[in-house]
Image 1 (cartoon, rainbow, N blue to C red):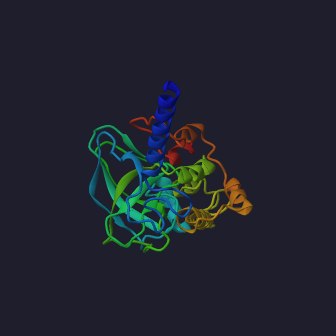
Image 2: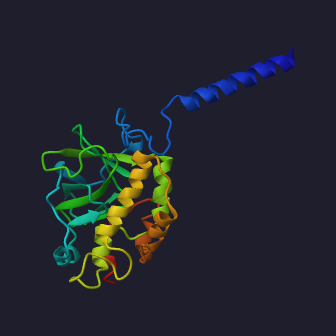
Image 3: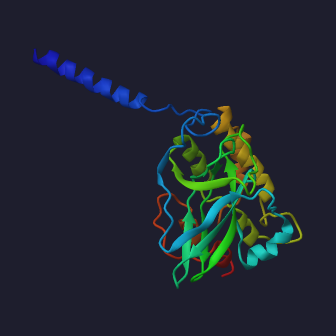
Length: 273
């Protein structure tokens, strides 16, 4: 009788575990909740994004499809960054305000989802951490470059399309991709700061250009979000061909689960020293 009771309890526990595993939507490449064609549900996040102490958003976040990145922008980018992130299909504009009298920094971590509030437009996904620093009482208008997470929805949102920052994805499939990217120098502000010759395309002294990086990583992301395809050896080799960020302090804040300081100088300032 005791053996029978033990068996019944074990079966009940296994049933509960099975129900828990099957209670939510399954996640496989090509079927990640909120990404690709799976737009009937919101993307799953760890927690809602919260703006850091003393920094607020002025107005709303909108598309900025007519804002272009060119080599001629590099001088202004190096003297005071205005464009950040990586990607080409989702380009957003926002104004940040430091309400404190002392400098403050906002960190936008890798894996962050920027959600379109209007049906039909792609969500933006951030593949590398960005940080933006503001002087005391400063307002700063910036452009954020992102990758699209829904191939069949509309890219290149205009100024009439409103976005908000949702939170960091919980997708294990996406996080394996982010871990592959690691410390790679894929962001505009990083490549611009390492620009060896402003007369050339936007690229660091070695490795692919910003446009090539954006196009290739976007294609790889769509394999995960929409196509359900595996990465090829060429895909993996391409990621390895992108130079790593060399500055040790910068690399520290590109890792996941990092405690961010109230203030950190921007990447362009770090590499000058």
